Length: 397
Image 1: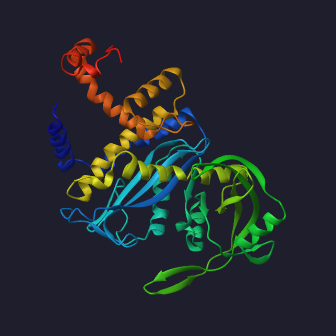
Image 2 (image 1 turned 45 degrees about the vertical axis):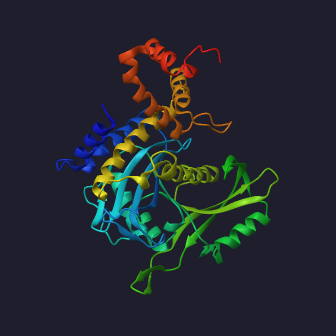
């Protein structure tokens, strides 16, 4: 088919009133269940948000003001499911898009449009738990979710969570102190243990961890209008896992203050640090959508509903490629090598296969299958010899 035919079919698909976005994510839910059945283990649910800037797309009349970016567009929320043992991404389990007209979501009961990010987390946790993936779930969230009040809600609901914390006052060994003071003390006492290799901004590094028990004892706080009100609650004991990312000379490149209610029997300090390290997978996911593969912020769909439908198709392709990446048999490795060759992408020496490269190679392969079936390699090479001999096979170059 001609490219215009593909565009027309996509347009018809996105405007079909019979289509329910919630149905488009069900195959990805099935993929996650199958992965857990084939390889049981802890499943990480990584929550994150990303703004989609469409400042130059005046035809999108449902754009919302993006406060932090001082721009207009949409706010994308995703819960990405990742294997706990090696950090391999599986598929998104929940995707939502906030527009000026409301929240569009793969959930049937979309959250209210005026919910801030952290207030979306509790219902997202409940939704993920209700999907019955038949494994232990740990919700991983960055510092945006560091809130005493929300921690108490999640723990009361029975959710296991891992959150990077800012500095705050806590009880440690019965004394009030700060998380930073505890981390400094652990560093001075040389309490850190090697937790394995990592990469930090492309550099080789190692993770070092130290752990202690802390108690969140202060009231929670909530913004109501322009005021902050205190919300009292019971003391909440948590594990504090201080993680340092160090280079080969022992210099500290980064420090993470990680709070979790995960039992030690399910994950020791090194495992907790590794799980938070895997949170970077969702940042790579955002990069893949916006810059390294799909160029999402250049899509021309006229409203958020159509854009979300197209996004679900793209995420289905990502989930299929991730499934291929997780395979290690000889046939799969050969196919991955073929797709990378077709992509024409250059890669780092220690990473021969990339998700964006596999997607690019798949596109080339799909475009080539039809002409190869119609003409065959010999006829195509003959065409090159007749019209573009410099590019023909066995041209002596």
